Image (cartoon, rainbow, N blue to C red; front, side, top):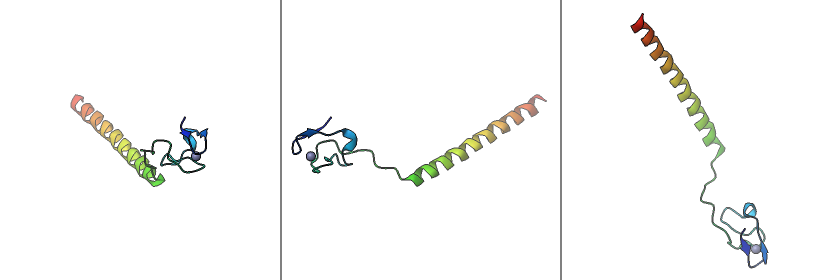
Length: 73
Ligand SMILES: [Zn+2]
C-alpha cells in the first residue's frame, strides 16, 4: 500500500489516480497505470470480430465434413 508523506497516511492502491497520484494532495506516490483505458467501442468491435470469425470457423468445419462425406460416399 503506497504511503503519502504529504498527507502522512497510507493510500489504497485503488484510490490512486491513473498517474499514481494521491487522491487528497495529488502527489505521485505510486506507479503510473501502464494499462491504457480501453474505449468501450473497442470491445464492441472485438466481440463482433470474434462472433464473425467463430461463425466462419463453424462454416469451415461444416464444409470439411461435407467434403469428407462426399469422399466417403
Ligand atoms: Zn497525499
